[in-house]
Length: 244
Image: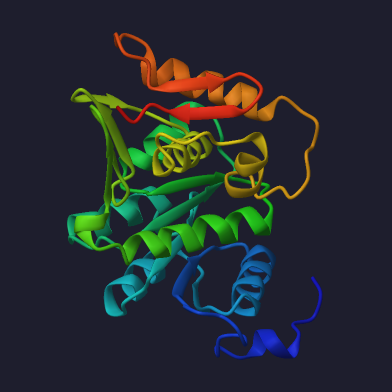
């Protein structure tokens, strides 16, 4: 592991950071924790570290955090048990689960245990940072601004739940982000370039069918079983969520 730079040895936000968060990292792997804490601090956030589940539970109960990053496999107290304990205490802090276990059942189990997001190892720091900052921003939402609605579709940004006509729709994180962006632009054509920049954070075209694949999956979940399709393809232009 590289030595920490001077910027990482202070908890002060970096210049230009608009909203530093206080983050608790619960990770027993010393090298992984050091790398993660270093990166978060250099990104302008205030970071504490717990090396096992019991310490993480104690620290989360004693201080106010904006986001918790919790490893799935922890000594003394398993990550999911830690999360369930916090939820039993009515602690609603947003939690990102890190895990080497990446099958669907494990992800579902993590989310049902009270986690807000799930990121499989190995991961890129850029993606982790984007997810953490997204969770922190969600915590700051005014409840009256936390729901998006188009016709019979409703998105709750605080609970990350989606329903159409009262029927729950389960989406993967990228599908959720894609739908949220489309709904925020309901009634307007959203181009491929707009999606690459705002959903995938690409500022170039990777010349892949990644958008087509995700839109197709989203359409299948969103419109299947409903008489009125919401997600439309505008040939030669892009995509659009029907607004009326």
